Length: 171
Length: 397
Image 1 (cartoon, rainbow over the protein chains, first blue to last red):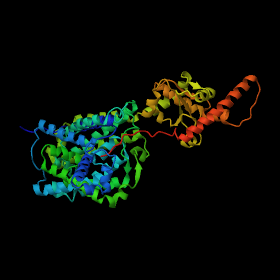
Image 2: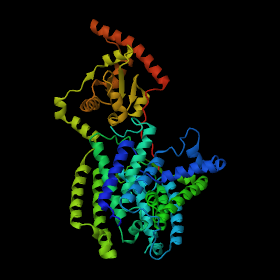
Image 3: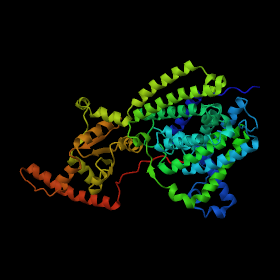
Image 4: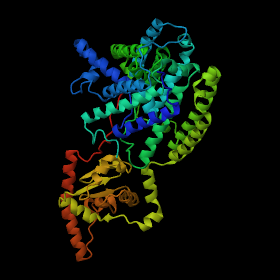
């Protein structure tokens, strides 16, 4: 079966905006993604290297006394939902397929290396900015927060600034 | 009035809602094509501007929705989470993330949907994000001073730019539409006939853009509900036809000294004036606080008499009219406010005995003043009556 076309971008944007608005209306805050990765990383460290985590101030911000267990957080459940929702969409549009996508001039190994590297940078950057493209930039813009607009401009501005150096990866 | 977490919805139910919202979020992201790293990276090379279209449209839709729901009084904008601005950490974090975007081809949210449909590069990106958190955790002691620096609080962008909210939103829509047009041209130049912009009818989008501009114009002109109601009740024509209920100083003090429990005073003076001298059973608020959710819960208690005092009777009267306009009952203002109580009961003004009636009043006021002083002393030692912090939803990503 041929995979179906992507949704019209403006329509997709409208629906994404509605999902975000409903989220703000019900919960009083926006969507997120990197927060869940952080929760999983913190919880894993706590299990694997409890001694280390209990001495590190960063982990104590989330594991200290009186804190909810990091995995029982709103964002972890939301991101579980994102996995399910993405899967359903891929299933309905015939896009479920184990594959690696890369630019025409690089092979999968290069692509994998840079995917990990990009993820690491995002993992670090999202801590500094207290959120990623979803949690800080998009959700912040929806509530017209200064932080949202600053983060958005910094992410995309920097993306364009580095694009020339990374062009071999994509074009 | 939204938001419903944490007031009406328990923590456990909120996790179920999180899952459902996540499903919708993931579905839309995947349908938009955000599971493809090449498509995402296209934004930076001019061959595919889908990200820009989706991202801008979503932000504007949600922002207009927030403004509209706030205007009609369905959403308490003072209770929603405005992510606080830590200026330099946000810039540095954004720059690092931008580099991560161009090298990794994803951002965290999109990598999750990519992984969901089987993209191996997306799974590795998620793994990278996990490692990144650990690295940040290890660096944290060294950088945490910077991490906490330039904390400016939950700023709103139009305030930061010294612009009216409506003008800012209109400008944002205009920038978005210009960006849509320009990037469409770039895309079709770079990608030719196969460019995404050529896969949908352009005429329809011009109409949609125009409709958005018009809709945005109206929504952005909406004042928030507080301003709307205050403007309405401040009008002299309105005040001629609507009377604000009032309570005399004597009755107010009588109710206080006789220990009438169904009385609550809202003091709209400045926090400084309030801490210098406050009436018993009073709480310091601003007139805007009266429109918030905390006040709404207290003002809906019909059996409690809500007495407003302010710097001037005029201000207190407007506040009462506004509360009546919102449908709250048993709201009155105290004529003469706090200073009248001070003058008539706690002052040292000479006693003039002209008639026996006045003498009776004076005697009564003298006895009441003793009790009133005690009450004020008690209240002060308890340290109550201070301004309640407006309960905001806690956020975090």
